[in-house]
Length: 187
Image 1 (cartoon, helix red, strand yellow):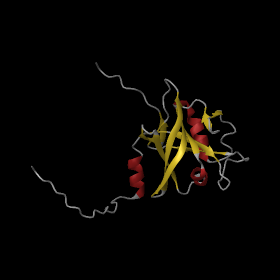
Image 2: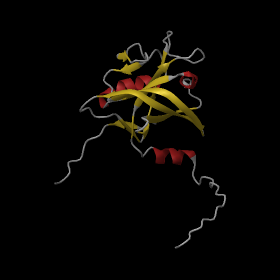
Image 3: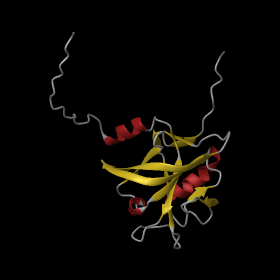
Image 4: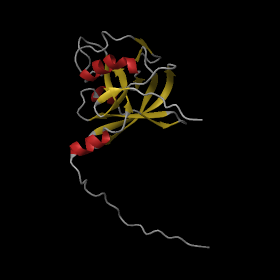
């Protein structure tokens, strides 16, 4: 029998050998989908103008975590005006945008005016907006939050979800929006 022993020593991360703009440019090479988070506005949170009781924001940090239990994650900057509402919310909806929803993406990214006033949506089972025409949507319980670096990572437990058939996704890469086209594989 061969015995393997492992020496445990403290391993510390090395300081980055790059500047922040270089890091951001490298990250921008990764194409991501685009989503809009919808939630209730808390009493202490800045909500959409004209007294809307919802908050909504565009994100590109959505990811799956687990099938059992069904978990997703996304992140939000510590300086976001929407952070107090999301920390206080018991639920939120992740609306994954389709390629034909660029205007909607820009509306929720702007942070100006009542973004819900000209947005077509229905209310899910917990009373939050599910955007019409979304490629997919996930109604989530706000399971946990982790502060890491300059962001908060939100882990949501999916309670309900839905999707559209045969719609191309809205994609964000290198500070530009686009979509995908499938490869035709040779037989």
